Length: 253
Image (cartoon, rainbow, N blue to C red; front, side, top):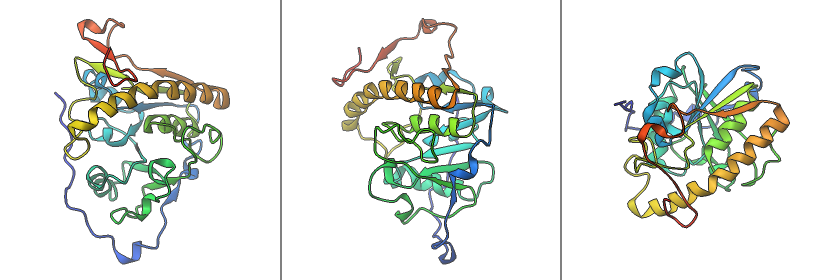
């Protein structure tokens, strides 16, 4: 069983000299991995069947906190209004030089609140801000603005193509439950979701499939890259494990 890396629960105050500083722009990372393979690591339950060592020496982008379980060079986040979820991550990443945090200027990518206006956000040489636009809008694909449609994983795919990836590999985009689990083990930590939210999460997962397909098609059209998905099993019978897709009416088939 894989073990999550512990992060600090105490948040350091931001030094006064940093309050007026700006983080870097994602434009500095354009075509930084031209012609290479990039792996986007999502939080679906299929990731329980992938050994972290598989991703060693690969270019990996973490969807939110997946870097705590798998080795990643980049972390992408958008929903910084959740302090319980993001403040420990910010504290963990701000002084590390092995991981870059890429975050949207606006909360969730399109709300009015600026992520850097949250009091616990901070300056770091390894933090990169990106501009986005309206939700469900793919017009930003191919520009210096990132598309934020429905799920952070979709934004990660846009970023991977922007970085110049020839092949983008999606991991943990399951759109359902495996053996009754909607997420990789221990991903939804205390304070992220309460039990009443699970119905909405199932409905949300069912709605993300078509947006990811739209993103895939757009990236192929604009960047000419390949977009594929990792299956950790030998075939789609899942070696005896049970898969149940989510539905828009808040159920598992």
